[in-house]
Structure formats: structure tokens, C-alpha cells
Image 1 (cartoon, one colour):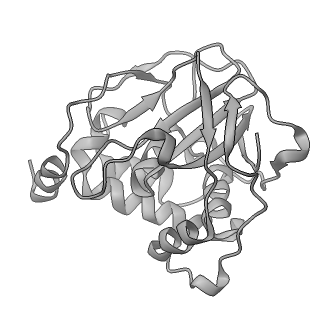
Image 2: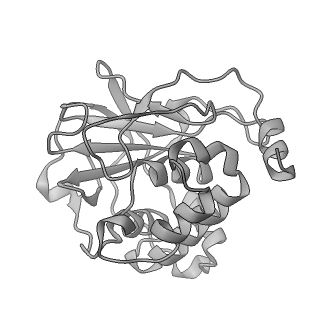
Length: 234
């Protein structure tokens, strides 16, 4: 274990979360098993969700690692905080369109943090920096490659080919970096054969306050045939 991994291990003080299965990086039908207890994938199918959209304060604080000046941040027209059904498909008018160029997941995250898609490369860099800081956390998800090899090939640079697309791995990393809940509505038949919001959240850490899922900032995404867009209001 290297020094950075020791720091990550010491930062966690809660018992391991329940291990679940994730789709592999290209969302194929065969799930891979999470063997790292530092990740949290919430796929409860029988409950309501709480929407707590990003505030301007949240956006300013969390866009700082992207080297985005606070004056550049513009809050999108997110819906008001409320309870919503996890199985209710978002209305088309409430879906913010995102450019389809192989960067859609990172563009969606950029939009939610800054109000603009244009900082997607900064989002990629932030996730790479975080995953490389704690390689043992992410190694179980990237297969036989090292974390750095995975990032060099798939995440660090943009591209239109599938290998550069964002996956559940990057969704989990974003939830951990920016301490938020991410709910993705899969509009097509996913690996779990369900059409509903699936949740991804951060694991509790000693270096930030313990927060229930209901109190975390919520980011909603819409995934139709591997293209991600932002749900402004469910």
C-alpha cells in the first residue's frame, strides 16, 4: 500500500458498504463485481427519491478545483427541491440537451457544476487526479490494467470512440470527488433490465461531515443509448 492509499484508508471510518455489481465500462450485459468497499452504488428499486439540486454556493465551491472563476458560474434552471418517483421518466421539456461528441457525461457534469458544458476537459482531469491519488480504490474496476493505464487510454483525453466515453466508474468517481448523489435514468434496456433512476453516491469519510443521502446535493442524468443529458427537473 502506498502512502496515498494509506491516507484514503484512514479517511474512512464507517463500516464497509454492501457490495453490488456494476456494468463493465462499456455498459455491456455482463456485470463485474465490486470488491472495493470504498464505493457506493444504490440500486434500490422500491422507494421515492429526494431532489436537492445544486445551489449556486455548491457550484462555486465545487467548481474551484476545475480552476473556474466564480464569476463564470451560472446556475441552470434546476427544478425545486422535492420528492419524486424513481420509476417516473423525466419529461422531454425538462431534459437539458448535451452535445454528443464522446464527452457527453463529462459535459453534463460540467454543466451541473458551472452552468456550461465547455469545462468538460477540466472535469476529466479532476476525476483522473482523484483516481490516481487512490489507485487501490479503483483498481478492482479497471480490470488487468493499472489505474493510470486505464485513465491514459480512456479518460484523460477526449475522443468520439467508445473507449473515451464516460462510464459508471467515472460516475462513482464524480460522486466521491464532489460529495453528491447522482441518479441516472436509463431510458433503454440496461444491464439490469429496468427503466428507472439508479443512484450512485459517495462513501462516508472522516474528513467530511457525515451526511444522509437525503441531505446530499442531487444531480440527475438521462441516459438514452449511451448518451448522457441533464435532467433539470424530474
